[in-house]
Amino acid sequence: DQQVKQNSPSLSVQEGRISILNCDYTNSMFDYFLWYKKYPAEGPTFLISISSIKDKNEDGRFTVFLNKSAKHLSLHIVPSQPGDSAVYFCAASGTGTASKLTFGTGTRLQVTL
Amino acid sequence: DTGVSQNPRHKITKRGQNVTFRCDPISEHNRLYWYRQTLGQGPEFLTYFQNEAQLEKSRLLSDRFSAERPKGSFSTLEIQRTEQGDSAMYLCASSRPPRGDTQYFGPGTRLTVL
Image 1 (cartoon, one colour):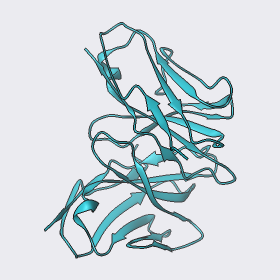
Image 2 (cartoon, one colour; image 1 turned 120 degrees about the vertical axis):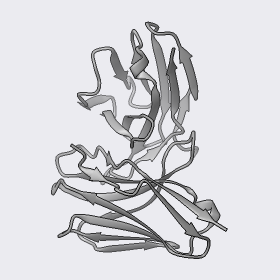
Image 3 (tube, chains in turn yellow, blue; image 1 turned 90 degrees about the vertical axis):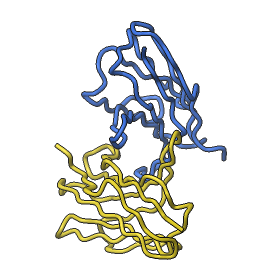
Image 4 (cartoon, one colour; image 1 turned 30 degrees about the horizontal axis):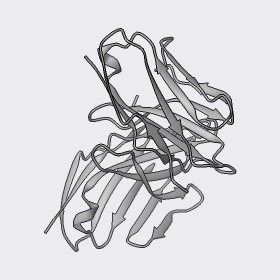
């Protein structure tokens, strides 16, 4: 049972444009959500997070939006840069999960020139 | 702050051999997690420690797997009698309360079982 889903395995965006990565979850106990970026042969790097008491969190070029009623979150990257090309993972944790993270399967973002 | 470190970065072993991996968390992070990632999947939780206490183990962690964090600092993950299905990237992460959900990952150990 995939509790965190990233339905787009890949996304291609032109440099300077907006990248939008989506994530859906099914477990209503999740109350904290994170986005990680991963390059090949490296561990995931933390990007940004959001608590369920908020619906938006912004950090520089990265903004995460949370829609609790739809159990959906998205990561916006504006403007996209070639260095943003990587695999992006959505993760969630919640009350009673001992803070362990449940990850989606990732979306590979390619930013083209 | 040097981040989470893991050793070795790569390990190639033959089926049936035992392997041990080490993780050094960010200093003062009292929570330490192990995850496993296979191709095309996101990391999957294996186990976690708060200080030296192992508080939760996933069903993925068979009897051949054992993890320790003897002094509440570094941790080791041992796999006995390795199988080809154990081939994966093993990731370690650490975090610090009060809300320890932001976990910082190390570079991982890539295990290949021949």
